Image (cartoon, rainbow, N blue to C red; front, side, top):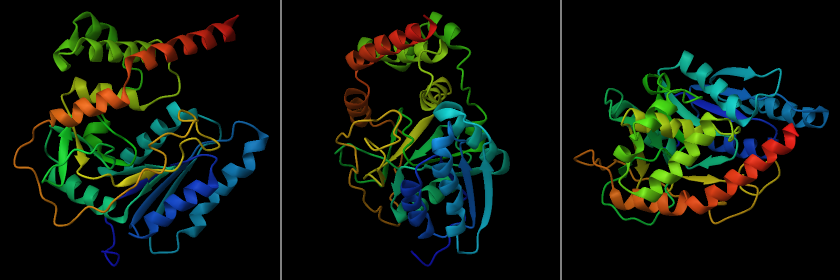
Length: 306
């Protein structure tokens, strides 16, 4: 597999962590993609300038035959607008591709798994996301499963899907008034969790996220996510310096990654794995924790304006 060049474009998104992004690029180098896009956000202050410069300089480590494009911001857009700006640029130039942030180490097989499934489902309007992460222990004889939940620690998608994305979820009030989420979930606590999240996104209580909006878009258009049978990526940014959302190490830090076996075993039918989705909701999206975070965010908002 290592002798096979990857034809699928890759977008690598970085900021101020040169040591981490070098490790991510080293994994990308294993597949020697023919196209690589590097997007780097701008520094917030003088102290960050050197780190950001070092991140930009990793492009010099691309020593294989590769078409490289760069998007270097002249200001700091943050972890909401920064990635979205990068993905807008990427999908303006490409019909489909793989997206990695600077703290996601992907197994070599992840890239070929994405490439094969991007081609297989390119005209299937039921599929919105191809994910590389799976932190459950659910067995399946197929190579991948289908989920409602859009996991984006190492993922891939198409321009046709990205064009549906709305970072501000402007139609949330209308959707909420129609009790839309009750049609997505039949569980009161799950509906309550996501109502609270989308309320915070729409009202700018959560100001540092872009991925909840991707989940919103996926449900709005009834899109499914492909989840690999075994985890293919490792997050090396949890609890390390520079982390924004995950400042404390947890069980997902450096979670073991695996290889996916080829040829892929494709499911015969496109059906949501309910056991998988129940696990993801129960373990990843906990209502009482989100209620606590809501009050913390509101307190910080009030403190800024007082």
